[in-house]
Amino acid sequence: MTIKRIENSVEGAVELLLSDYKRQTKILNYLPEAEVFRDNLIKKTDYLFNNGSGFAFYEDNTLAGFISGYKIKKYFGSANGVYVPITGHSVSPEISDRERYYRKMYAYAANEWVKEALFSHVITVFATDKSLVDTWFDLGFGNRCVDSICVPSELDAINSNITVKMAKKEDLDSIDTLWLNLQLHLNKTPMFMPRKPEPIQSLKEWLEDESSYLWIAYLEEKPVGFIKIEAEGENYITEHPTMMSITGAYVDELVREKAIGATLLNAVHKFLIDHNYKLCGVDFESFNISGNAFWNRYFTPYTYSLARRIDENILKLLH
Image (cartoon, rainbow, N blue to C red; front, side, top):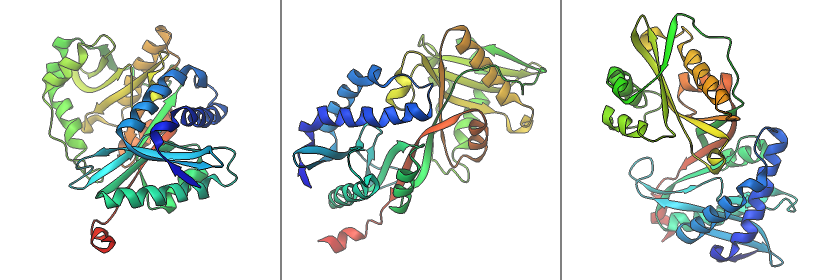
């Protein structure tokens, strides 16, 4: 194994990333073809390699694997950290034991990152690569965020007593409380995600984008839930023009178990079908109990973002 400057490894890295993605299309065969992402991957990988912190590993002058991430200040708390996106790592399919190679790469990278006092490590991996997910689990990582996908279709489990309308800017004041409760929900157990609530004005500004849409559910003329979509989500796959992503949803806790969420999702799916979108995505926290149960009912996970927090006291022992 030879470790080289990662900035000079973009071309080989993109080939490995495309190979990884092609394996996903064999499992989720409705995913777009790999080649449509080539130019986008080149741009993203080049930017990451020149602005992040990473390492390229060569065997006999051939790129065997790489790992690279963005340095982030105060990442999930007071500690600085590093985020390795789905475009930030891969191991050649020619390597006989990919999991063992990943362990070697992470051991090297983690040592360098900890020396820089980067203690929160997060990596996004394909969810269907179970052996690799298990490898990161063994390395001390746990699930935090899920990207899921589905083919839009009309749902059966809807509530005919619920009225769903696509919202205009002037409708948003009526969901001010729901918007606040969504943000406060993430502060609660077991999520414990500290959020400073954003005013409804931020949602109004978001809706001004021509690729942003929001639906409101009404029960007896009272707003009881909403769901919103936009053109892009959390990774390069969501940027495909035939895909839209759900980026927020909430149902009043007092009226749950009335299929309000499914009724809202059905409205989204009908819109996507009518406008010739082929895929619908969503990302959510794995430890959001209600959200996890709902989204897993209708979507298939395709990436996990796994997190590890290293005890910063180790730095005293390394010097």
